[in-house]
Length: 444
Image 1: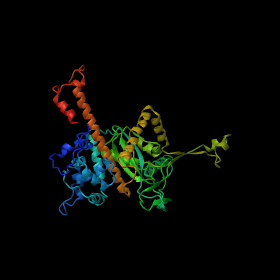
Image 2 (image 1 turned 135 degrees about the horizontal axis):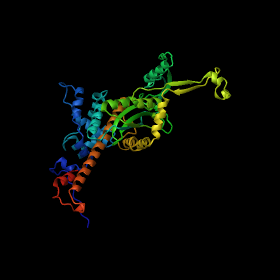
Image 3 (image 1 turned 180 degrees about the horizontal axis):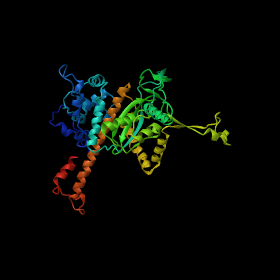
Image 4 (image 1 turned 135 degrees about the vertical axis):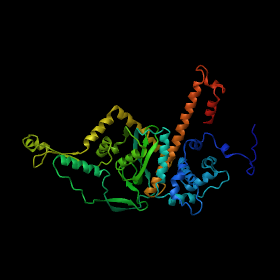
């Protein structure tokens, strides 16, 4: 028998708490239980005037609002404000009452563009979240995986001009020059003088977003992009670093500097790192094996004995040199590449490399699928860096909340299981056995 629909009574007044309307297993509840956001207030204090101006919006709430947008894949700030207006779980997470007015979208954007722009606040908040994960035992820093993914720039690839730009020296040039000069000194040669010649190349520059770079890689889309160079920890796939460059920067260039930052900032002592072929360069292999930081390109020359070569019957097949001397060019750190290759082919190396698809590749897939990481929402490298940091924060706090929720559940479950006789079926448990454990399980 069909029931008649109950007439809608929107004007009906009911007395109920907001807490009762938010599901107990909602993601925002899990996050609120395990993540401390109060540190934000102290971190942003230098960006506010202490004794002048109108009372500011609560900075903790402002950053929570921004994180909600990345947590639930809401790219528009106007739409985000509209969602908060009607979503009870969002209001609960932000500490807002049912009738409290939501801030205007312009307030959110102006704080982002003016107060927080050109500051380190996003990096500071990201670092603090990583430190909270370390304190909870979710990050070990023993094996770190790094790779990059592209974000389409907010720029039309047809709106561009060609410019002559200086070719920037490699990040590893200083360390390489030192190694070359040390080698020359061992062979009784004078050190090389530093080059003062500036080299230029013609590059395609976007007139809409000049900070982006024109990417033209095999198997990748062509156009103006940014690259997010990300590192994740091998224990639970939490993100420990994210750094943005133009789309035409080689993956290997920022790697060692970003690794150094993580070692110094978080005190990591990694056993190994998982990298793809784009990072397989002599400088990176050398610096990783030597635990140094600054590598770059340089070559070692091997000269054969001219007197021996002169009488060799295979001379014509070997070299056409007038001085009958064979010269082999070999990178000064090529031996380190060979060692790295041996490690890759070892049993341990194969196991570490195989986990890339479960760690860094999965992290990027989640970011693109659920956190708006396919496109750059803003223009300019600094703004895209902010976007990548907020997306990484959202992924981290979600993963921390879920991991700790599961760990807590299994801990309570096994404690409860240990309280009963093995022969007794679990569905027949009596609540009198251990009321505390039952309350713990029901509260998850």
